Length: 313
Length: 313
Image (cartoon, rainbow over all chains, first blue to last red; front, side, top):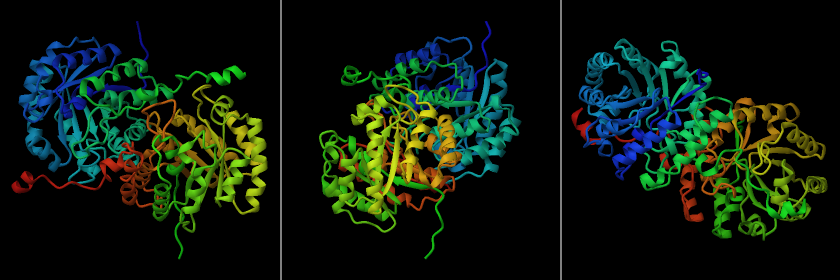
């Protein structure tokens, strides 16, 4: 059976980037059930967890158990975030299909977030690629704060492009540009994506937007219009930013899928199944989630004509 | 003193479209203070209230008192929504600078919303224009549900364009295309705006989007890119849709202003003053409001570098 290639690939990050900031402990079994449900909906890539310090990110301290417990759908890449060599070793031991290495463009943010310098991190990445490839795992490398840093402000394109070049020199299989704290705007996105696609094919580039200032979908569409084809998103718009209490998190998967379908782009994902799954999130995390389409329904889920009008027809 | 023309005109509708659906009564004095604050921020147009049945929209039953109480900033147009001739008479008696006549593209929605047929409404409009112009008031006419109706679904472009033609034949000064229940998508917006701008100059066309499915800013940017220059928005993203409980309302003024400023468009509005005013809304309406930028701050409101990093520099 052959399937047509998708117009756009939406990658689910709620289990990692969504749950990472949640104060309420989500049981390992609930995480596994969420990921299994996401798998059956048919995502090509799911970011499962982080192999980071359990002190720094206690909400994901069960990364190994989650990887051990999930059912793996053929065709889905199960990714683990790793900050360093130790994390990579643990992720490969857990049979992650892909390591997602993260370094911030801003050295200040990187040191605040990971307690490492760029030099330390790039040395780690150099040690990670070969062992990953030896066991058949992919390595993706993320440029966090690529569109702005909450301490340093706007990051120059040249700085981001230099990091991309370093990543490619070290042999990574894919690169993510992340708007970690929702500072991007669509003009900036278009310019950086255009510059990046000169050195990287679109099927190796992921855009990761946050909706912190309401621009997540605007930026995603701008990136798509410029040629980007892979996007991270989190079911329900889970996630957040420690510098913006009360602000929304990642771009919401079902809202992005709705946008794609409304403008005629295939995603391979069933919007109603995503909405149904999104309804389960408040029960897991203990609060409402920001996604809009789950509250409003699909645009053409029409409402019955009011009784008094039907009588008078 | 001369000022440069603005790239984009953002028109504030929170006092009308925002408050209209609020269950909690907002005191007349609070409404007047809100409108006066909006005036000092410098909006070119503020939709003040509705002259509709107080039974149908009890939250705006003090429309005449609000018009009587506000301070009028020279250069700002104070608008009143009117459904019919009686409403227009009351609005003109209250010295509204502009009447905003509303009719839905969808006859089903129009009858459910206004209890009138298209023929009835257009007959009303024909009676409104002359008396308004005689006292120097403008008449704007809105096509509600221009991008979709919750009962009928998508509205054909031809139907909307025919209504625009009828409005123009009746001598209106401006036309608004409204996505009343947040069903628009950016491709559809671009197509309808392009078709409309063939028969209407951009300075007579307003786009009115709701963020019901998270696409308010996406649609606004699509309309701008196609040539639209006037946009309605509501402070804090106030407003809502009776068919989407829990969904967000109008496009949020401060979020739209932030988008404009980030991509280099002048609005004539001070974003920080909008944010400061938005903070007062939960106290007025008794609940959180959906706007994002007020929660997250302006993108370049940077955060202090963590103390432990500063020590180690």
